[in-house]
Image 1 (tube, one colour):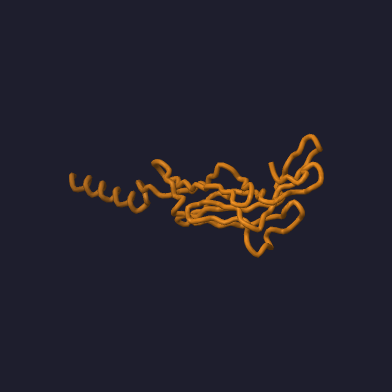
Image 2 (cartoon, rainbow, N blue to C red):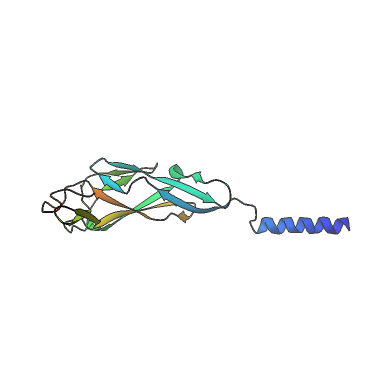
Length: 159
């Protein structure tokens, strides 16, 4: 009887280990930033990547992650940013985004002379990657160049 109970317990343990029960597997990663606008050449935004595991606390994976940046859309004056020979944004191995030349304005002013609203006409889509898992995308607008000189923008770019 004792042997039978012991055998059943051992087989149950092996079955649980074989199914991955009890492992703290990485489930998702979350990309974070305190803003989605880069204002001016040299402007920076620090990204953070949090690993979310099956149980236990999340972990900072920023310096161990890789990133992709994909330009999308146009500037306020319809320059297709996907055709630029070099991107206007870089990212280092610690997740720091930096606005670089060529300067761009991916915002367009809308509204009236007294109330100006802004829409993004283009952006840079950023995704983090770690352990075969991709984060949700984040979209960053550029305000490193002047905008439309006409009203209501009067040369401003972005909110």
